[in-house]
Image 1 (cartoon, rainbow, N blue to C red):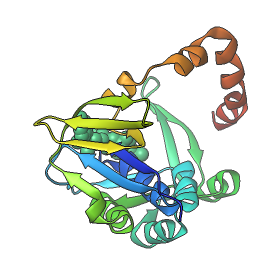
Image 2: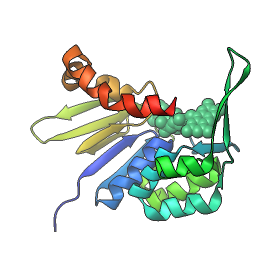
Image 3: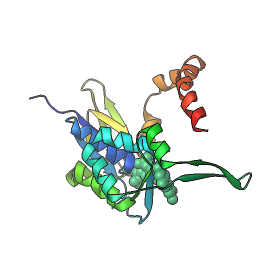
Length: 201
Ligand SMILES: Cc1cc2nc3c(=O)[nH]c(=O)nc-3n(C[C@H](O)[C@H](O)[C@H](O)COP(=O)(O)OP(=O)(O)OC[C@H]3O[C@@H](n4cnc5c(N)ncnc54)[C@H](O)[C@@H]3O)c2cc1C
C-alpha cells in the first residue's frame, strides 16, 4: 500500500479546513494547526459566491449538499455605488445560476464550520498551536513546522492558510512567484480574466 503524503496546513479558517477536506479525500494524511483554542464561533452569516459553491462541489459533493440544506439562496442582488449614492444595477439570481452555474448562498458560519470539521475529522485538527517557522530537510524531502512553545510537526508538505498575511507564504522561497510577477508572465496571466470581469461589470 502506498504511504500517504503527510500535509501540515497552518490555519483552521475556511481555506485551511476546505483544503484539508480536499486533500483527505485524495488520500493525504492531513493535520491542521490552528492558533486559537476554538474554531471560528462567530454567530454570523457567510455568503458563498457562485464560484465558491462550485468549488465546494468539486471538493466534496456531500459538503455542497450540506451547504444547500443549511443555507438560503439570496434573492436578486442590487448593486449600489457609494460615489453616486444610487443603484447601478441588479443581478438576478436566475441569471447568475445560468451564467455562473451556481447561486449565491448564505450559510450560518458556525454550521458551515461544523460541516467542514465533521468531514475533515476533529482528530486531524490541533487547536491552540501557533505556527512560528518551518525548516526543510532537503535530503529527507520533509519539512518541520515549529510552533510557539516548541511543539513541531513533520510532514511532506506545508500549506499556509493562515489568512491574508500568511507567515508560511512569506517563508516559501519565491522563485516561481517572482517569475509570475515579472512583466512577460503577468499579462498572459491576466488576459483570460478580462472577458469575464468585463462581462460582470
Ligand atoms: C465581518 C466579516 C464578514 C465577512 N463576510 C464574508 C462573506 O459573507 N463571504 C465571504 O466570502 N467572505 C466574507 N468575509 C471574508 C471572510 O471572512 C474571509 O474571506 C475568510 O474567512 C477567509 O478565510 P481564510 O481561511 O483564508 O482566513 P481566516 O478566516 O482568517 O483563517 C485563518 C486562520 O488561521 C489562524 N492563524 C493565523 N495565524 C496563525 C498561526 N501563525 N498559526 C496557526 N494558526 C494561525 C487564524 O486564527 C484563523 O483561524 C468576511 C470577513 C469579515 C471580517
